[in-house]
Image 1 (tube, rainbow, N blue to C red):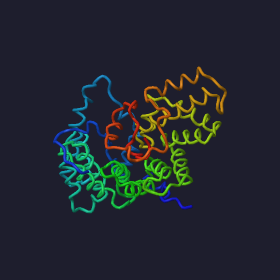
Image 2 (cartoon, rainbow, N blue to C red):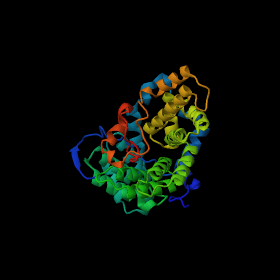
Image 3 (cartoon, rainbow, N blue to C red):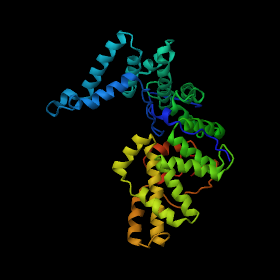
Length: 363
């Protein structure tokens, strides 16, 4: 049986329909993150220098005002302006990125995208993703899903592994939430992103195979996707496997696997895992909640582990604020999924998280 996504290239991995009011932020929508700067000799050498000369990069506690955010931004802009005057295209991108993070800089990203200079080609994909994010969130421009989609398609560049892989993954998300939904396109873009190493999309493919959304139902392919994603650190895929083991009555495996995930520390481990895996914290949290719930069930009922109702209450309490329960099913119809899921992703209020933007086939 063939798996309909490309295998991860570890070498590559290493190296809307409405216009909304102007100057409104994402609000109840998902808060996206910026595309990272493409790797290059300049960035590598700077990182190596910083590693070897750490004392020059330590904050001076006795002059904290000297390193205030505003002064650092001003200094960075001064240095970048000097490089821009010398014709450094990379500096122009960095300036746009800095302005963007400060809720400015749309014009700079447009300049990069429209530049005819071949030397900035590798920057155009990242700039297009970030500008698409601005249009989607309504930051510095009038909100427009259609313009965000256009820019993300440009940034994704037909699945080019050297383009914006984050744009490829976000398109999988976008097509599973826009009205009308286009799950075949969502599957296509998650497949492209997965083939280029995106861990979030690999977990999404596993769920799509499980429920036959955008592709024929294929449990074997689903498990392969989920297991590979889980091995690479996708906590939501890990939580999904825990649920699968429980439902299939593999209680010993469920109890052992779920404990490892449920024991993650929410305050410290989630930010770290998000940085390392580039997965959304909301889904890391949800994966932990799934694991906590099923580990508590195993302890409460003595399934695959010695019965311990006191410890079971502890794991139930870890899951309590996320309100994960048996109401979450594998087979909820896709018609239950609505655009409101964008709001649920960013709310940090998992008591109402019964749908998910990335996984339209689960409630």
